[in-house]
Length: 208
Image 1 (cartoon, rainbow, N blue to C red):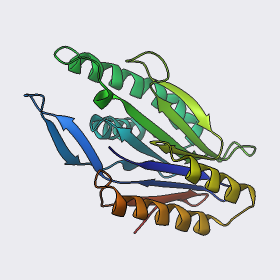
Image 2: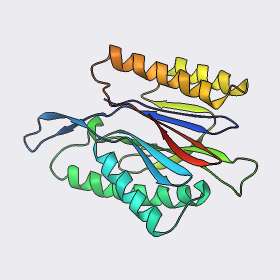
Image 3: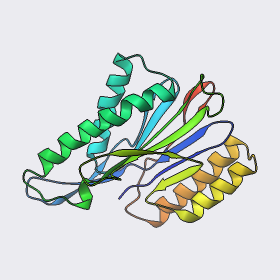
Image 4: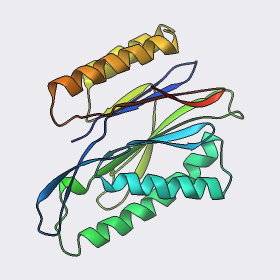
């Protein structure tokens, strides 16, 4: 199990994640892991991965690709990330399903967030990349305000209301931090270290 949280307002974007993951070894036994679920991609873009532990490797590969192509703006990063991650995920699924059946442990989610200097109407964007289509395909949807995986509807509603009321980004961050810390304290399957970051017009910044 894992938990990722993303939200945005007119000031920027907040991203948060725990580090818990599970995988299956060669004997099909469940193994507990700690992975990095929050990763900076460029000066103004970052990605969260939920679900399968393999998502971390996919994000690292995407980061190398984004850097090699000198992509920064969220519009161009997203346009490159969707086909790139779809290809990585299909490769992962074909490899896994050669000897294991399709299983929820193989599902992976990504939330891509970033700032666009050229898009004045929609400068701060969040995109969900997930198995919307039949496995092993990824598809993308834009997130209007807040999204969590697994879904935390009460938190999403709270963040959506705060965003509509022009709540400062720092206050949104405090709300997200408090909620995730409480989840980690109450649920053994959500474990630290916890990661938090913001993206503003000044760029990406990880919060300690």
